Length: 483
Image (cartoon, rainbow, N blue to C red):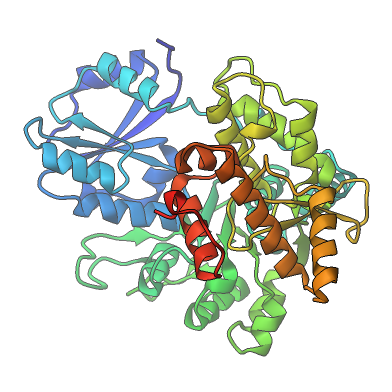
């Protein structure tokens, strides 16, 4: 069993508190424990922990409340539920509601807890210097150089770019390269919860300001004193909260809900969005004055396909991260080519997902093209672009069928049929026809629908839906496969 170092548990329990002897035993195993009552739980507790341990007595209400708060902070904190040994139903419900694991609430042995943390793969905390970022492409290197220059100037920054491109990574680089790097980095997703909860989370509240406010609660702006606040999906913030945020940016001070005292702030604001804020301004759903306050400096992070030399280094990094210290699996040259020529509509996040799937499918061996399972978007085909060609010189590859690529021969054959029929087919029709040909070929070469789905690299359920759509279009599907 691996030895743990610097794993931090947040022990949330109003009744079963660990003794000083228990805490010392946990510490000897390299596991730090912070004990807190649910009613005394503050956002800063989540920032310092890697996993929360929650005692559930009768239902999962507390579990859901904590998950909402974690989501609002943009945290990846996991929750382990403690339940009574004889309450199997509550344990199952906790797992269904997102608990990472369930442990009997009578277990206090640090050896058992170390085994649990090993089993659920809770990693020791890494120092900032251990974090690695990939900037291999000239486009990325230029962006990194610019970000490092901006980091030294204490101004608000707006990061724009598509979903999954790495906006939070860039925000963390801005923080780590700035004079504020010793202060906290507090991330908050502006689209993660209702407006009233967002207001409370950001601004905090005074005791008695509303029902249930039993104590003073500093907001995230206060908790980030001396550091950086990262506001993700700023374009989703309500118009009402935009006005309050603008006031904070202007005055560099915050007033808690139910309070009157101005609390001075020493923070830097970094915001991010994948929306066109200028279009939102024209539609009167985003404040123009807030836009100019946030975008004292604007950084644009391009899509992954526009920085193609980052793809393989990122892939190698993700494979290494998922290997838990073992030798990472190797990508064949064909697999590398598939990664380089895919269009990556989901950007870096999709690349990570594809590689995690490839590790599972390859069973730790060499990763080849048949192990690359791309995301199944609503569009039947995704255009591909080679790294050595301009955007107009696109190749074709089906994003959900990585092993069933459309050949030039099949496209030429289809074009000949179209000309013979005198029909000028558009691109969508041609693509659908190619998908149909690929599916039918797999069906005829397989003994069952499940085998055909496996050959195509999709689930049996996805294949069933595709077959149903073909039947609705009047295409004859054999009865054995129409079920």
